[in-house]
Length: 152
View 1 (cartoon, rainbow, N blue to C red):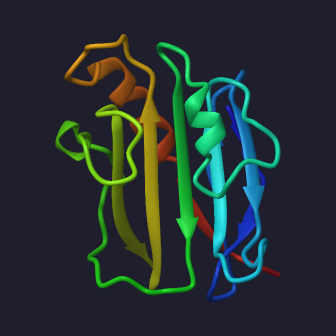
View 2 (spheres, helix red, strand yellow; view 1 turned 120 degrees about the vertical axis):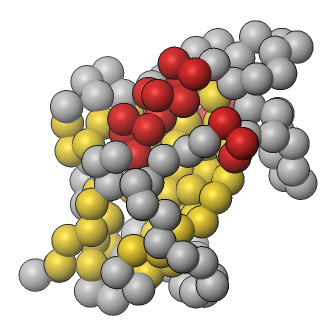
């Protein structure tokens, strides 16, 4: 597995993920564009360069079996509890405002006093209602490597 680039967050910390070989990663530091928090996006298919912070263009090209995970460290602090272990659950997937498909999940968590937002999209055949458990397991394998470290 490869370690994605560490990306600065608030509180003098950097976030990183370990990603499987063949995956792609983009890290955008906070404030680019001005007013946004840090974003780390990883996928098992090529990411679109210069995509929106949500990865809208990348998600629109998601292939069957594709996975895209975006972790945001925004400036605003949500009132949310730590989510340990960091995992997505089948119940996190479903239709909600802004989701491009029912194969989309979003949840929030807090680690070391920093709030994060996780956005996940998986490519499933059209008409499929439930997300394949193998895709959920692959997402959770990547999420389990989430790390925060002190910046020098």
